[in-house]
Image (cartoon, rainbow, N blue to C red; front, side, top):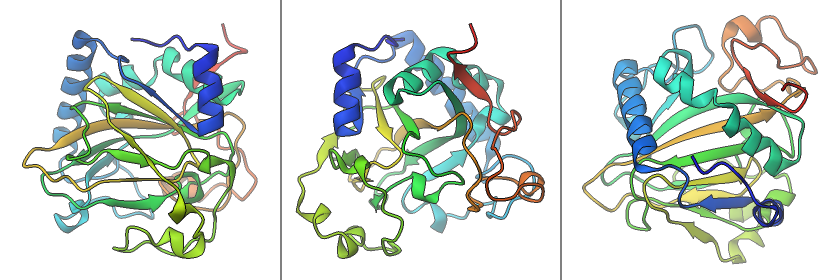
Length: 269
């Protein structure tokens, strides 16, 4: 795993809000990731979330997968994925890019853009999560080659510097966000193309979207969203199970290691 960051990469990430590492996994590591994720997704069947009670609907339909097949928190019920996600090296990369002392898993997710799947609308991630932070960060690992044709992401460089909590619901309109923020609609986005085994990191406030998959082949990716240690609950339910939602209030720390394990802390050797 190419996990050592240069000062130039960290500087570029903080300025642009994203970083692409094309040679992140070697061939052997890539096959390990593919095998673990494919098996975990198969075992999860049509359940988006692990066992438990949630405010979100667990079981998905074919209509729900018109944009992508999404399975969340596979680390919780698959040992192979758990070993990948709890790798301290990943946590250190995320913490170093954001310049923070510790990082927890918010959620992982398999994102499989099926053949001819629809585009993903422009959005920010952290505005939907149960904590608000300028330093949330996501790693996105390409399990297949990612091209403009098969549904690559697009980033708006520098857009992570402003939190946009009030943009309209996207629905089926790819550019709905730009109705409230027309200046974003005048920017030139960067396509995130990369070989299989490459990865990108992006800040939780990065404005991004993804193309439709205009090919007869699926495009597999696996991601993990990270939450800075000491983050607190903001009242949004998102992926938290009822066992947590029923016992916390706004302002309480999100430090349940069974839900959000601490992956890296510079205070722990």
